[in-house]
Image 1 (cartoon, protein in one colour):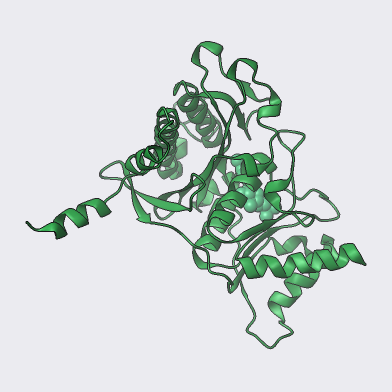
Image 2: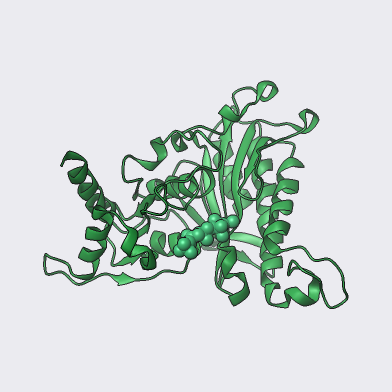
Length: 340
Ligand SMILES: O=P(O)(O)OC[C@H]1O[C@](O)(COP(=O)(O)O)[C@@H](O)[C@@H]1O
Ligand SMILES: [Mg+2]
Ligand SMILES: [Mg+2]
C-alpha cells in the first residue's frame, strides 16, 4: 500500500479539523468551543468577502452614505460588527460579547447563552479601507464563571486567563492566525474551496528581528525610554546594522508581519495619550497572547501585558510586542528609568 498519498492527505488540514483535533485532547470537552469557532470562522469569511468588494462600496451599498440608487448604506465596520455579533450569538455558545464598535458589553439572551465570552475588534485598521490596504479582525475568548450569573467581571479578566486568541487578516491572502494556548497556527483561505487550510503550522517568531514598527509622527511626544529605543534602532551603538522601519497603520497587518519576520511593534504612551491608543481587551491582549505563544514577548512599559487587570472594557494601554530579544531591550530601558 502506498502510504505517501495518505501522508500528504493528512497534511491538508482545515481549521475545523484542527479545532476538532484540539478538542480531542480534552476528553471532558463537549464540542462547544468547536461550534463557537466554526461560527467565528464563518463571520471571518463573510467579512472577507465584503472587504474584497470594498472598492465597489459605493455601487453595492457598503460606503456608509447614500448609494447611486439613493439607498441607505452600511459602513464596512458597522456591517462587520453586525456579522460577528450575529454569528457569535447564534452559535448558542456565547454569554458576553465586547466589541470595539459597541459602547456597552452585550449580554446574550439567557435562552441562547453558552459558556464563552468573546472580545473582538470586528474591523481593525478601518481607516485603511478606502485605499485598499490590509485590515483585519482581532478576537480573544474567555470562559464565563457561571453563565446564569454573568457579569462584566467575566470580561475584565487579565489576558493570562484567555483560552484562545487570534486574528483574521484581509490582505493579499485572507489568513486566520489562531492560538488555543498550545502554540500558534496560521490558516489561509482558499477562496475556491471556502476553507481555511493550515499553511503556517506552529509559528515561531524569530528571537531577534530587523524591523521596528511604530507611528514615528508621534515621536516629539514620546517618553525617554521609547525615544532612546527608537534612536537605537536607527543608530545602533553596538555597530550592528540599523533596523528597517515598516508601518502599515493596521495593527493586524503590522503584528502579522512582526510575527512572521520578527522585530518589534510599538504603540507607546505619549504626552498627549498617556495610555497609548490601542485597546486592552480586543487589541493588546489577543496580540500579546499570540506573541507569547509564538515565543515572543509583550510588555506595557510597566509589566507583562497579559498580567494587566483591566477595569473598563474599552481601556487602552501602551504596548511593545514582538521578538523576545527586541522586547527585552526596551524592557531594560523602562526598568532603568523606573529605578532612576
Ligand atoms: O494611525 P495611528 O495613530 O498610527 O494608529 C494606528 C493604529 O490604530 C488602529 O487602526 C486602531 O484600530 P481601529 O481601526 O480598529 O480603530 C490600529 O489598527 C493601528 O495599529
Ligand atoms: Mg483596531
Ligand atoms: Mg476596529
